[in-house]
Length: 403
Image (cartoon, rainbow, N blue to C red; front, side, top):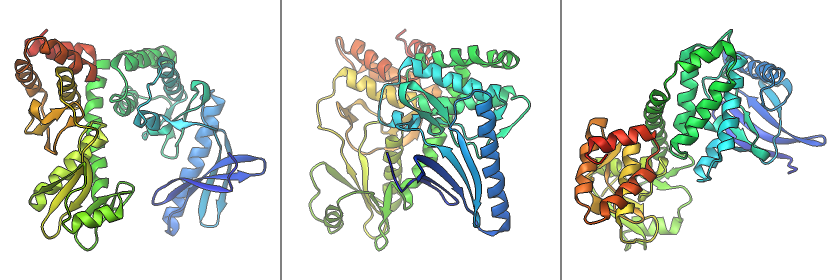
């Protein structure tokens, strides 16, 4: 792909562009803050990333080749190799692609390489891992990283939890277990004992909590202007980015709801709670009514777009619905089997965080409502939606009286 310049990523003080330099495309990462202190910090971050990339390349760790470091006016820029056709691991997960087992081992080798090279990467997550042709896996975004003599067990655990949190809802527990085993085997001898002391079950449990915190933070983007929503300046509230402006105007004017759109009239607080709850389910990748329009000014209301064609729910679908929610430590108010059909949640409900102590009783209640052979199908669907370790699932089933 030949391009004059293409913006790849942008934040408040950083831009990443794809540019054409001579006969090849390069990635240009630009750091630009205001004021002398900000410029000094930018210079340090740019130099640190450039030096760490050179160090990792020398250690045989697969990262983009650092091509140059320069000052451009008040900004600092790092030039990097462009990896053709590479996508982030986070993007692959969001696209719903099945991740092959060799990819788990390649990811493990990358992580072990970073640890062996003594690089502490506090911002390590699936968005900072690239997957290229042939299953090649590379690490990126090292401006916050630093070199240390030897990583501690706590730092190793932090990296495992962070990566697991971003992958657990899109991979099976066996996939992640294979990655953990490959990581442990690839660790240098000096770190292997520290790695062997880490408990994969504890890492999985911490990753579930970490993922919930990440999603809760991401829900904030549904109540501020950005890629998810656009603000309704005159009425207060938000509309989903990309929604048809004419359809939004008609809805706000009181026209009959469009097909597939449901309107909930409520107090401002209740409407906002529903909006945030459905946004959170969407961030978790669960089938639920999608946020479409929120009016928080006069006559507050929330509109939601129903996902998929409505179809009767069978026992398997009900099991999948409950399994997906409990796997993420979530529930709804109310949470009843009749609120779901084969396409997911029928109507918006307020989201709750359910403590582990309530999961078994809730599972037992839903199972009692199944008749005939329905319990077997329900448990099959529940297990298919579960993303935690199988030992955790077996313990939950035993607690509910269905070992």
